[in-house]
Length: 111
Image 1 (cartoon, rainbow, N blue to C red):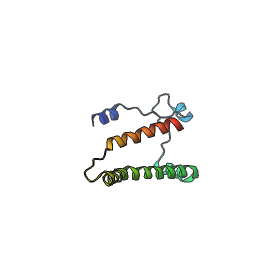
Image 2: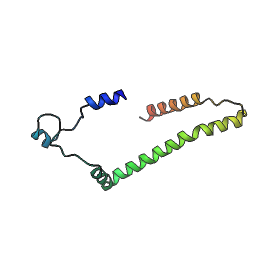
Image 3: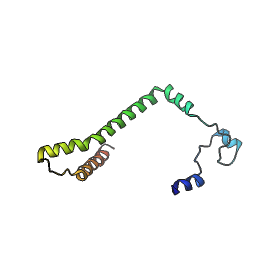
Image 4: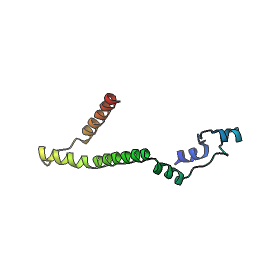
């Protein structure tokens, strides 16, 4: 909470300087800049099919990741108890660290 207060009081927004704003003011407060609205941003995204496709692919990828994240612990626990018996402990820490190692290796291999 203290960090939010400090950021709210002392954060200076990094706004792009355009020809209109640099001619109207010499400081970086951006008083002459036109403020965009959510509606304008929505219209831009809706008007560009490539942006819509990128957004759809990103949303579907994130949805698949969340389904995986929520489903792997019960699936692994069920497989461990079926293979080793009901009293077997599932090594979630080891499995998660293997997932992270595979993610690292995939990033290093494929960029």
